[in-house]
Image 1: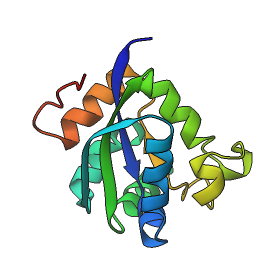
Image 2: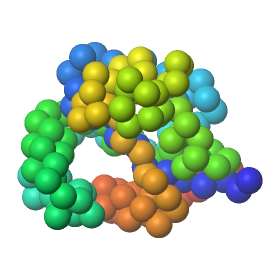
Image 3: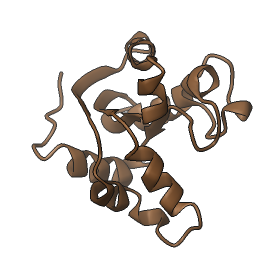
Image 4: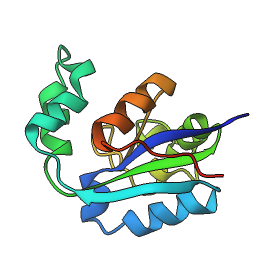
Length: 141
């Protein structure tokens, strides 16, 4: 596998519950390098742009409201096969169906409030990293 980068968010529910540090520890324990990390709160406009792929779906407004409802932590992660590895560590979208030891099983409470986000593919990772980190994230060796 090649070293690649992916985008991750610790969502408002996990930040509010005080679980961000535990999630970051899980990420580091699985061998990810955190290239960039920033805490902030999304505007509704940026949230709508981020979830643009879902704009025609009935849950679009709920997604936008939730992700912009409080502070989040955004990260650029790097590791061999990072996209797939981060998705495995996140667990299933519905925490009830997530495997033991995953972030969503431990910290998610519902499909809507599932603690974290991760890019679903290489193109999405490039788009999301570019949307949130205006300067390129240089690979670390």
